[in-house]
Image 1 (cartoon, rainbow, N blue to C red):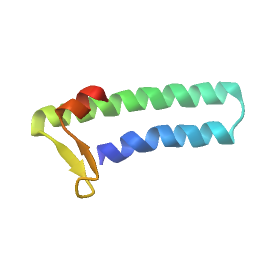
Image 2 (cartoon, rainbow, N blue to C red):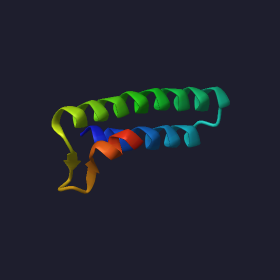
Image 3 (tube, rainbow, N blue to C red):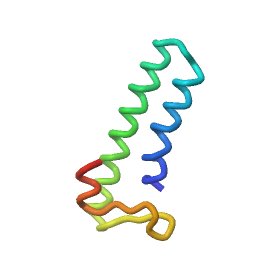
Image 4 (cartoon, rainbow, N blue to C red):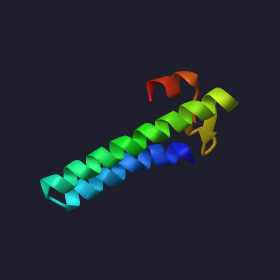
Length: 71
């Protein structure tokens, strides 16, 4: 489930930024998305270190130790 959120957060920020054209709102959405993505990346890395590779949707989304490092 973390992998889904890791993909959904930047998508939601992009949709919000395209819907609202004010610069301050775009910057706030970008900063919030970056912070949340960073926290989710730390959670993925922690989960991979504890339990090994994680996958979702029968392996369609997959994160092993190298993927967690790159994220």
